[in-house]
Length: 270
Image 1: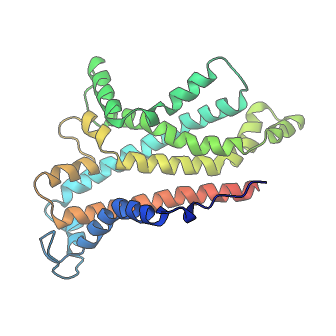
Image 2 (image 1 turned 90 degrees about the vertical axis):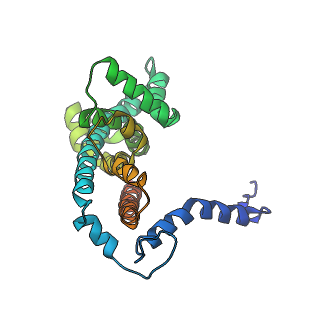
Image 3 (image 1 turned 180 degrees about the vertical axis):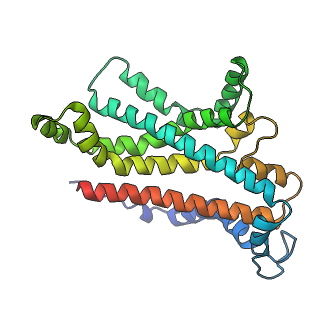
């Protein structure tokens, strides 16, 4: 049996790892720290305060950001729900339908939004909506987000499905359950950790999306990422850092929940 390779012993591994961590996370830490800055300057530290977080909810710009946050939540909930339903159906078909013509092509189409650059997806969505005469607004954002979120919901659901043996459904049907009853009463509960994990991941992907939203949102419609972008063009202020930190915290919570739900499902399966 070949010995396992310990990457940590390779020359330069520690240094490269530290550089990657700094490049990835140092900007996030700086934004979070300066969101507590008592000074209006984004470079000079004036002491710690929570005033900017209070300003997010009660300041002169709070109505704009609150409406944008509400739009983001509505779109994220609806897009995550629709994407999860489609991804669940796709996962069942891909893992339980056996071999069928076009299976490889179907798998490629499901995962296509992950491989295509997001700016290409954004431009294509804008051209498509213009060609069919849709007025850009919340509905076009919802459609675009649903399509983009499908592969993110599909991956954990499919991984969960692949770990579930079909003997459970066969045993249920041997006990005179119909295929529908075998799915709803046996397979679906076993799939639930993957479905919850996929829906949480799709929700946070939709909530944080900027590029596609900016192309298809239309005039006068804002989500929280696009509202932040519009505010930044007028100058970076500490309240923008506070909003960004809150969004970062929400993202971390939902990604962690998605991971934990997936782990719980794996442990129960074992």
